[in-house]
Length: 200
Image (cartoon, rainbow, N blue to C red):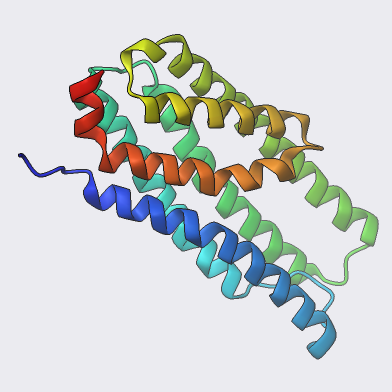
């Protein structure tokens, strides 16, 4: 049997699924340690930011390979623009988030109201925008679900759930739980792609 060219993407999707919760936990530990041990109560750049940069690079790669897989295995191009938007959003979210941290760090001390408004505005805009993109991706996948295997259909359902949580903003924290889930499903798509094609 021909070697699956998406195996690397599959393993990186698994790494992506592991990195995200690790980064969240590390971020919490980092913030608590900074406050309790070093009396730091302001934004700062730390190991979590480096970990999230790695996560971002992997996320961009796996999205790009998912686009290639849809082209090659299903001759499906309807998601091209939305996947590109998702890739750019992922990069901009990381860069803008880091930029805000750097600016607030350099400008510290900052009024608490300004601090809160900046982060709430950034988070709200980010969640609503990616939520809309995720919902549109899910709608397209599920509209054509008969053309795909079970893993891509599953990816569509999880993406829809994440998108709905994100656009509500208040439920967006629930979407964080779905990120590792969608990454694992993406890994299964890459690993089992040949079987999906054979039995669709």
